[in-house]
Length: 293
Ligand code: F3S
Image (cartoon, rainbow, N blue to C red; front, side, top):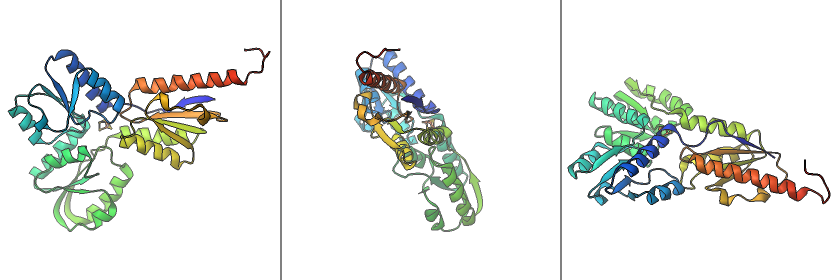
């Protein structure tokens, strides 16, 4: 059985930066350290951070002293104001790509554009962009929703960083018919797209796919769905302990991919466990008296 790894997988730049910043601060600070919401959607990483003294606070009201780490999804201006008023040390781990989307939304709103955010209104990143986008931003996620909009004099368009590039262009075509003037900020980050493209490609070449990452991670779950859509047998696991030998019976090629919130150490554990399973299986198939080469 040959084990192949996807070309792009695991931590994206923004998540890695957030984890590095959290760890640096865990070493440097003696006071209490909190993240606003789980730093990433990976339970193993969150519990490792908790062992290093970094706790999760649901909101800024729950923190009265110490350091607050703002996660890669970012937050609105009000949260910075409240943290400063409380005298908290702020460690800003907002992904620079998300920051660009927030700044674009703020600039467009200040220049009198009706801000349209392409994305999922319930996602924490979109909530953070909304908070910077003036008084009445509109969030849409489909061409149908764009078609229902009235005509505006000036539209300013930004996107959730993980929004699909193809869908962005389709919605844009509709929005261009809904205004006299349009400003577009392509605030899409390619990290997610690269992970999806390479997962799909690998799924098309193997007999079984193993997708590693938090069950609560939307991007990992989406990767697993994309692999399944290619028709390949796909397993979504959080850690190596969930692997089952019988999944790989008869498989000649197996692929591994991982979401943007999955750390390298978990991917390596999965890889080495699968290699071990392969060796155990070969030994089991040896007849007594056969030579081991
Ligand atoms: Fe940033 Fe892109 Fe990751 S926006 S958090 S680098 S998916």
